[in-house]
Length: 414
Image (spheres, one colour):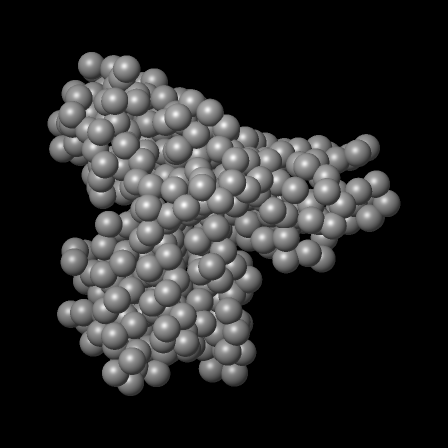
């Protein structure tokens, strides 16, 4: 079977990461790129590595007529209008087999629901990209512990954390454009990973029913004068005026609809992690068994002394968002595969070729958006949010966190 021709929207950090992942699979060629900035640079990476034609198109609608699937890897604040343009092209005859949307689906529930309605109105197959669910360590522990799950029962507690020193792009730091701070950026990862790991074997990804959310958000590092000044100078974002949280933690309680058992997914995320670089830390507890994943435990470590560090300082070749270029460094030599990017692309390509949705369709992304909004609401109100309450469900539909409105000082600096 011939690979599907993929068109990429966006040419920033995540688009390059997915390009590295697609080097390791056969289901996609990258035949189109469109972006407001840096599209030619991404196109050169694509063609230099023999990944496809990498043709640069002036718009989504123009590209849609020349590819089989489109992946939207562009910033959150243009997500809805980009999906509108894509769907309009499909309704005018663009023969697309599917659309991929990078997490988060949108900045809030109203936007997320609009995205889902648009995609479904065009009859498009979809894949919501939540890479951590596809991580080989997370998948392997499920396979390894399957006999224990079947004999003893499923996991009852999963803790999932993602932490690093802060995003690459200025818009990520701007809560009005990104949708918030670290909870919006990375909490969606950790909530999804915990929900998935808790899900009993053989059940759909949305089998467990979320019943409540509690959360706390804080500005611990990037609101301090020294770091605030650094952020303003390097990113052009003023956290004295529109701060976002750099730390978030909370618990989502889920109910097993068959047994009534309540299980817990704890999430922790920060942009203030001061160790080697990006760390994903997950562990789960079941009756008589457990698992743990720590991406800073690598089979390769290197040492760089002071003299050698002066000659070359590109530490991100070793680990995403590295904070140091000398000393003892952990090296993840295939981050795209470790973090699940390769396998989620394999899943989407196979699904679209079979005219099906990916393992995680956009409606799953909608549910994650709802849980993230509930977490912001819990932090704002300083109370546990009851997701079974119809009034709460209705309130979440139009809720926009104060942090996302640019009013973070009211909740983070009080």
